[in-house]
Image (cartoon, rainbow, N blue to C red; front, side, top):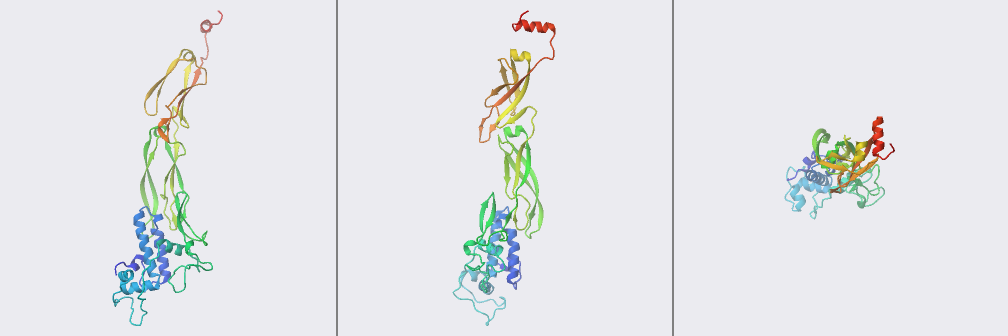
Length: 351
């Protein structure tokens, strides 16, 4: 017989229309491509399930399949019926000799089953073929269509779309903070995150699945940057798993503070150094030592700007922001009379 459609749907050979619908609903929710990481395998299984339902839910296709098998159904070249084929005998209705196999698409079948109400989607005696028009029936051009919205897939209907129209529901994303050091955001880094989530097996039962996610932290990323892993949330029947989102956060640094693409460092010098000069030595976030000579007279609150020594700019990591050194002057707590006299003399005061 070739492909065993009864086995694909896991029903017996006397299965009723209701049995077929129940079997299809269960298997379609398990193997829908939007619910599986392995898209190629899921698409193949989903197509098989759809074809099996299409054949067995149509009385004429089912009769020909039972009599002549898959080859006879699809080729139109019917061999003599098998003796064991569902008990069809001489008094049984003979299939139309002009019959040609014309399968429906998986999307149309899915839309019919999950978008129907009690009086929608069937023509009496026509094997659950959808109505073209009529009353509350769904038009052919109103079937659910897979569309992309907010990074996920939803299903849109025609006249009967809405809260009760069926289809897969997308779960809101799950966000987690990802703390990064300023060094990681300066130089770039790779983080490995181990997650556990529920995944449905072939029978629709949840199983705990552990997975390692790799996050490539790019140079210059800022606090609030989001990294999205689509559909990595828990799997449940009838839903599209939630996206898993990691949100970058910055750990405090003992020396540097970030301000956009700039780096700020606070440095204190003595009153003498503010008047006579000083060389400030710093270690950068990529472990380079730099020296900044201060030769002018410095007032409290003075800021020295070093171009291109700030954070890498994420859209062009070859460029950087500025390094801003904010200088404070430390005054002596007290002066002796001799020191006051000497300062007055040096600074031009009267003796």
